[in-house]
Image 1: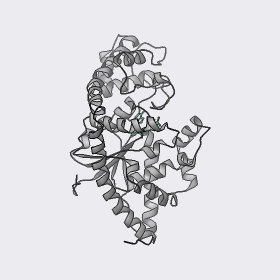
Image 2 (image 1 turned 180 degrees about the vertical axis):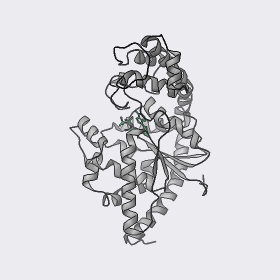
Image 3 (image 1 turned 30 degrees about the vertical axis):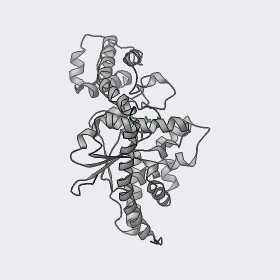
Image 4 (image 1 turned 60 degrees about the horizontal axis):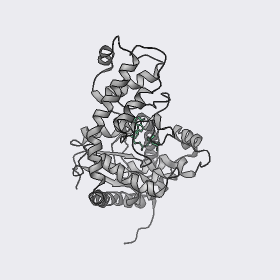
Length: 335
Ligand code: AQP
């Protein structure tokens, strides 16, 4: 693999912290296909981020294969996109340390993900959870990425990445490209089915809150049927109706229909009929991905080969950046 120098670089990561949900898929991965031809795209399985909350080692190993398999099963071509596992490229941790020294305690204290996750894991508020955005800044800045396609939940982390990069550039001359977040038109925030004021998360304790990409058809339909909605009956997108709005958004992402078209389609029909339609559309659109995922998971040596090739090129790119950063900082480099 070799990047085309005329194309901009895109970087995004996914934590192998559980089986991916339709939040990860509709908010991020599904949209990446549209970038494949026009950008040099880098997609990383960010296992170093995942250990900010406790992971079972065997599960983490399995999830690492699975996350890569989801990328490929979603239709992304390993010949056209650079895939690798974060811990296979030591420069991510190295640059994160450097950037820690250019990030302010106050800035990190304002991150809502830190506040949410420390409330959720009050028995393990570790320093890694606090400095998570710095590692994410390192992931992005190492490769001079211009665009970072993410869901809306990551907006604040891209803003802090920009601030860190500008601070470093001002101190040492132009070093890093200042990245922009790249929000796709739809799916930027898929909410929990049991509490539609919260985002859907793969590590939510409540299984019914999320649709995992490997859920069976029956489970998908059952979870949508039970999804929390208000006491109304009209399928109409309205302020304050978070539950029904979320389902309409999901249905729109799955079918490509606009909210207006959906309102029209379900005029005079109740929530029950609509929920069933969302469940069926979801099960239908995941069935191909599920079959391809199962095929890939039965071929670990292929997945390892993709990881190996990806990390070779990523190490080459990352080490070039590290050498530039160390030179600017005044770190002696011996050959
Ligand atoms: N609910 C969501 N709606 C839209 N986009 C989402 N993303 C995650 N959840 C939603 C996007 O998916 C990409 C990968 O996310 P991640 O795995 O790196 O981390 P996350 O945002 O913390 O995702 P989860 O599912 O909530 O994981 P856990 O439960 O482990 O914390 C990102 O682009 C993200 O924006």
